[in-house]
Amino acid sequence: MHYSDSLEQSSEYLRMAISHMGRFQIPYDPTNYSVWYEYVSGKNEKLRVDIDTILAESKCITPEFMTRLYEKYIAIDEKIIMEKIRRELRAILEKILHHIADAEGQFKNFSDVIERYSQDLTEDLDIESVARVVDGILSESKNIVLSGAQLQERLQASTDEVEKLSRNIEQIREQATTDLLTGIKNRRYLVNVFSEEARRVAENGGDLCLIMADIDHFKRINDTYGHLMGDKVLKTTAEVLKDSVKGRDHVVRYGGEEFVILLPDTPLTGALILADKICGYFKNLNWKRKDTSQFIGPVHLSFGVARYRENETLEKLIQRADRALYHSKHTGRCRVTCETDLDTGDRITA
Image 1: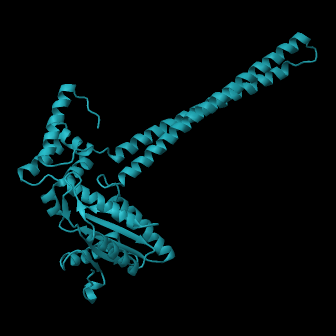
Image 2: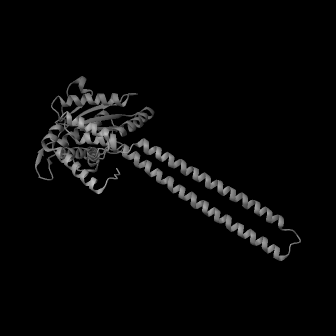
C-alpha cells in the first residue's frame, strides 16, 4: 500500500495500529499492519464495518480473519492489474507498429532517391557531376543505415518492455496462488492443478489420490499460547508436509488449519502409507517456544484419504476425503482414515 499521510498522521496511525495488534495478539507483520492502518485511518469504510461487526459481537480477532480482510480489501486486485497490463501491452504494440511504419516510409523514400540518382547518371556527365551523385548516394545510404539502427534500438526497447510485463504477469500468477501466511500453495492453485491432473488421468489412466489433514485442537493452541504460536504451528506444519512429498505432488493450505495433499500417479495404498508416515512424525515431534524455551506438548494431525473417481469434480473428491477426516476426528484423532474404512470398518493407526 502507498500512503500519503503527513509524518504526524502516519506516526499516530502507526501507534494506534500497533496498539490494536497488541490488544488482539496479532503478529506484527506488513499484512496485519496494513489492515489496522486502513482501519484506524478510516480509509476503508467496508473494512472498518467488518472489523467493528466482529468487535460488537465480541468475537475473537484472529490472524486468519486479518488475512481474509487483507485479501478482500487491500491486496491488489488481479483483474485491475491485468487490465493495466493489457493497456500497457496495447500501447507497446501500437508503438512497434508506428516504428515499423516510419521505417517503411524511410525505405520507400530511399528507394525513390536511388531511382532519381540512377536517372541522373547520363552519358554526358562530367567527373564533378558523377562525384556529386556518388556523394549523394553515400549520404542517403548512411541515413538509411542510421534509420535501421534506430529502428532496431526502438524495437529492442519495446521488447524489453514486453519482457518486463511478462515478469509482472508471472509475479501476479505466483502471488495469486500462494498462501500469505505459510508460503505454500492455496486453494485457488488446487482448483487449477486438479483440473490438469484429472485431465491427465482421463487421457493416460493411472491413479490420483487426495489427503486432507487437519491440526487437532488448533483452537486450544491459539487460546493457550497465543496466535503467534498458532501461526508458527501452521507454518511448521506446512513445511513438514511440503518436505514429505516429492515429484509432482502438491501441498496446499485449504483454509484455517486444514491442508490438502494431491498425489498424482499414487495408488490408494501409497497415499495411506504417506499419511501414516506424516501422522507418526507429528506424534513424535516436540514443540517448543523459541522465546521461552517452554515445551507446549505434542501437535497432532488427523487425516482423511480418498481416491479420484472418473469424471468427478474436485468438490466431490474433497467431500469424500473430508468424511474420512471427520471419522478420524471423532474416533480419537491423531489417526488416518481411508474412505473405504467408512464401509469396511475402522482403520486406526498408531
